Image 1 (tube, rainbow, N blue to C red):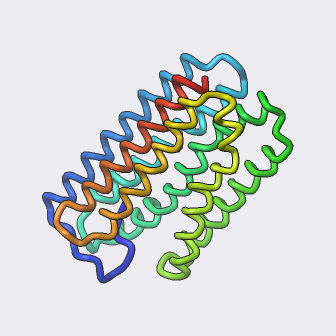
Image 2: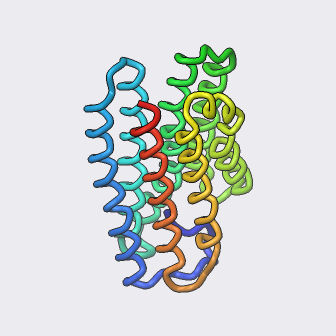
Length: 215
């Protein structure tokens, strides 16, 4: 995940190597996580949910790792910067997909399908805006990230009824992402790498919750 504006301090070679490796490992984790979840999945809805989640992990971390691998200022790096930010939407939506599918099916939640549809509608709009107007309406993208990132909290009671540990890991993952934003906004050396670690921790926590307590 790259810089949010042109005034941000240019990252050193060592920082970019650390960033590329950290999220490269995230992509590898995504492959392993997808395989493990597919092996454990039993119902059709579980296969669909974990496939979306696993693919989202692989896509986001691959795009981030590649973005940080290319030479600063190059055209390809600018292109992958867009892919990097677009993939954030995909990971957030991919994380909630297996959760909402399971909660909808097991609890017959009347707003479940509507909420899932709204989730992916916002994601689609965000992706289109990010791809076509990358340097504009940045406040809107931050709003979208917050809405779809924490929007699932409206199902907290349903998650609690389903499994308390599942709810706790879901919240812990969200907090890891949110705390990481502090380091994302700092301009000191290797703070962006620390942000990457918090992002990776958030993904791992969500995987643990889904793998051990949702499937």
